[in-house]
Length: 570
Picture 1 (cartoon, helix red, strand yellow):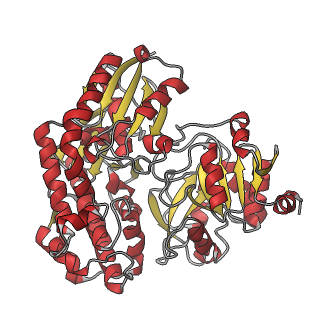
Picture 2 (tube, rainbow, N blue to C red):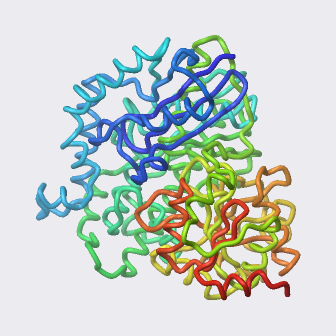
Picture 3 (cartoon, rainbow, N blue to C red):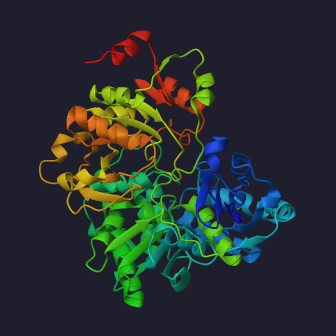
């Protein structure tokens, strides 16, 4: 058996993939194990995903000598590091009013300032030592272009033989946006954009103007539905036929609207978000048009952080020449570890193709590993835990759901989730309070795939919660807590062959309520990664207003009375 590791270790979302020549074995994000959200790589003052490497080897009983190759998801030299440093500092300056000093920007968790502080010493010393260690431990170490890794991470698990690929993120060694053609297991670059033409940076920069930090661009996406397209801001991104151009001067002028600290979100901020979102969607469609013109492909793959923008993805899918779309669930930099592993296999002479139908490749716990974490808690072990959980949801309780193998990627997809009934009008606010989120932020439904056509327009599989859908007339009124203000929802579809207990839970909830979906958000407290260990689930349960925790075969409550009432049959 041939085994390879793929490693993302240089910027953010450090992660490791373990593959053999036929299948994905494990995908692990370092943040889940260290409990440091969005943990930094070397160029941001952090380090390598060593805990993830060790977890992959120990979990599957592998020794260093069993690993035939390691793929690294960046192929960068010192001059490129300096250029990345310059590009990111410039992005930082763009969103900063003229009067704000360099010192102020250090205090605002600005990624440009972190890079300035850490990049060169980390690259010259810490990373060099880590790579030396890798070469000592493992047989071969290969380095791959970052966007090539992103493209491979999407295409080789899409199930497509032929596809156009769009990669869009903040930065890499040489490009922030690239177009590719995937055909017969081979990838060919079509177009690469210069560093100052970054869709990821413009979205992050404008998000900074709106008062959101580096990894809070999802707030901008949600806020956009509350605003209107404003022509005053449309020149920040020029849309052309099959192309786009970022206008740095127009972007710089947005600094006058900068929102700081606890400033209120005014209508102008909502309109800036709406305008940015519309422009991004148009740019995405033009890139899809360009890649289709070059390749003739009707299948589209997307990767990079921008690929998590659900309204953009939906708009691309709705283009007349697009028949199928695939977005890898770990579209951000954690997913580049998967691409690096695939490319390492290719270096060894293997063509890796496996359709990714789920992303449950993390750790899992049996009851014997869970029960010690419940010491001192009020709980019972039950063989009908799924039915009890469905009953709790039908009674408008908010539950923590910790079952099976952990998901890969930034979105909880039914194994480490906080769940609630979508039919209760105030449930969105209640869950946002549990998560310490702004009340205006939308929450997503997980929907039985076969019921999707009854509820949503233009149904299409969305197993990784990467597409927006509009409710059919009147249907959104039945589930107000997952209907966004614009009448849409960011949907996860639940296929009949999805492993684990999640589908069974939603089916039982449907039996009780007639609603074939549940409200689903990530199981974590504000500032923490998605829960990984049983003790994390217990901590979050105790620190928030969740009503019950369902972990393995255990039902956990905060009072004996509440547990007894739940266990009573209707």
